[in-house]
Image (cartoon, rainbow, N blue to C red; front, side, top):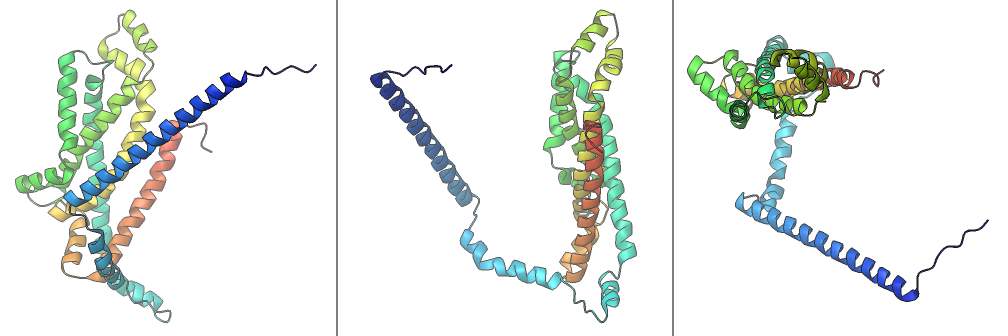
Length: 294
């Protein structure tokens, strides 16, 4: 049985159509206005930051020339010999690269421990008092606001050159970054187990152990692994200020214009970061969604 479709009166339909067109036009005008404001802000920011597109275009060839000089000459007739000459200090670079990974690992581990201890005090739903929450949050903000390279410079001055300065710098910055992420994970938990244990007379530590940790453990581990990836990159830069790792050797190659050494070390760093990213990505996916990973 056919159902009749009601038809609006012509005057009412015209009024609705005009209102729709006016709304669309107003939204289009707002969009154009926002885009115009963004363009103006980008232009003003570029001027204040002395970003000169013409200078970039005029000197882009220098960048290409530098990249060209870092590419070694490899011939098919002497392929393995050319590769061996390119990576003439491979054992030394590999040792420094391994040191870089260890710096990142220790910095991540120490920072994650501090973040774990403070995140419950910094979360709004589990903080034992308002002042403890404020103190924990301000401390974590300080740790992640100061760049890790600045901490590395301070520790190099205090403790001398070496990996120790890099580990301490990364651990402090990692504590601030992970502390905020961990606190956000804690704030999004289901509070029913917490309320149940609290009603049963459990202590604050017992509530954390039995009601909170089972919910947040996968998220904590995932963020810690992600931070480890970031710290591997950061540890490579620490060597620029003498805080250990392959970064110092990389800086020496740049300063002394050892172009092929620059490309060799850079490729080793890139390959290491890619392998770590691939490995930790699989682990993070298994932790977050164990049933969805085959």
